[in-house]
Image 1 (cartoon, rainbow, N blue to C red):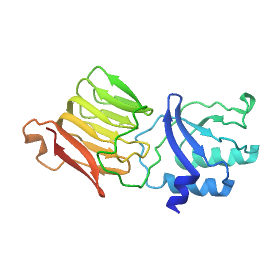
Image 2 (image 1 turned 180 degrees about the horizontal axis):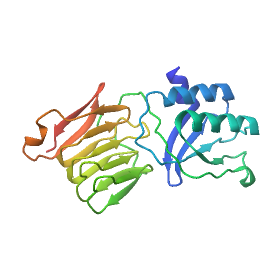
Image 3 (image 1 turned 180 degrees about the vertical axis):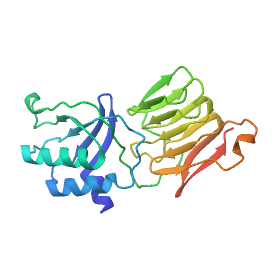
Image 4 (image 1 turned 90 degrees about the horizontal axis):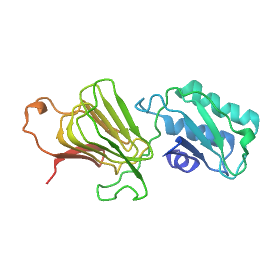
Length: 228
């Protein structure tokens, strides 16, 4: 079921927001089942995002579109902003206000040296993030030239690099890329997420000396290593 979900629907980040990419050959029932499988065990780190549905070369009738919109909205709090695809003209695209959203997750395991694609964009944040601030880079990587204070959150589809202290929440690989990494000059997070994996620092970590560290997925867990 999980492999079917991966091939039937994909979730990727673009400049215009998250995009649910649908297999043109799948039936509406297969699409619905794949969405349910993909959304299982998801968190809310992408709260406030909307979603576009990319149909590619296929077309859905009005009833099928309503079924998908209701599934995404009622079950997962996702609002469909736009319908796009080769078979869709501008008159069939729909607009909606932004509401809470969640990421899709990929279960495959990867290793650190399988880097994110070079064509991904990198967003630079040139200030310290205070409690309550959330910054996202769903089309690529994020570099913070400052600190991420407790209560702040950073989310990226690719890697997260903090040239300062990371004391808040960081979610790299938010759209499912478990080869993403989190790096900080001083890694003291409230919580780390990479893809579907979540970890918290051990007790007493705050009392260790400052040391640049990198977090990555190894096997079924996030590990943290000193960075030379």
